[in-house]
Length: 221
Ligand SMILES: *Cc1c(COP(=O)(O)O)cnc(C)c1O
Image (tube, rainbow, N blue to C red; front, side, top):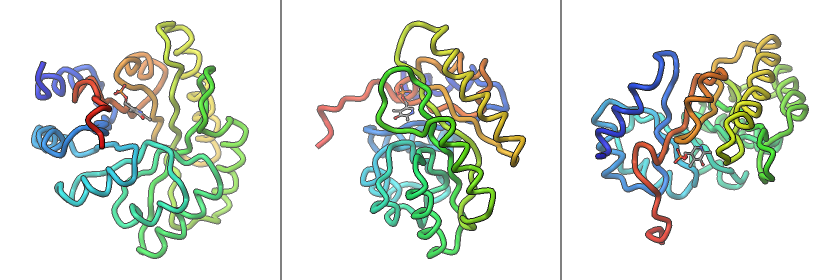
């Protein structure tokens, strides 16, 4: 299927309350432009350099989300334009984003990335760490940041019951934190598991290959 058909096929499966983040990593600017012209405005990238190169070439009303691990020394390259950083996994990073956002007199939206997969993943906060950081944030130490929700990735497995279990852990944490201060975004679900994620309460999904096709890493310099 073409990108056009893929896009409409994915959109047709999303209830109206679910936001689509089109994950364009490794795909060329021309493919992003094509999806933009179909009406898509929210795109996700996982590497700072690739993101800044594409951002410079594409329409300025795209809302860019960073979904990959972010080193504190790279925040400055995206602070002027990034809409949401979905992958915040430390207080140090949160402080740095706040500082850089301040320099640009803007507020940057942030999701706390929580480790929910049973498989070993390097990045993400434990649930208790995410709660502690959120409590710190609610005491207003980060005026140029708005934590709008949580992001998580389930284990890469065909076992749907395991995937569901992991998503529900994040949904429970979301509901818990939401009683402390209102959150808007629960980002979970990718090409292979977004329907399960939505059943478990996701209202934002990050879909890449099901729109753009498979990523060919051999083409990346
Ligand atoms: C690449 C990526 C996605 C999209 O993955 P697909 O399987 O291509 O849909 C979603 N979230 C994160 C964090 C990613 O790195």
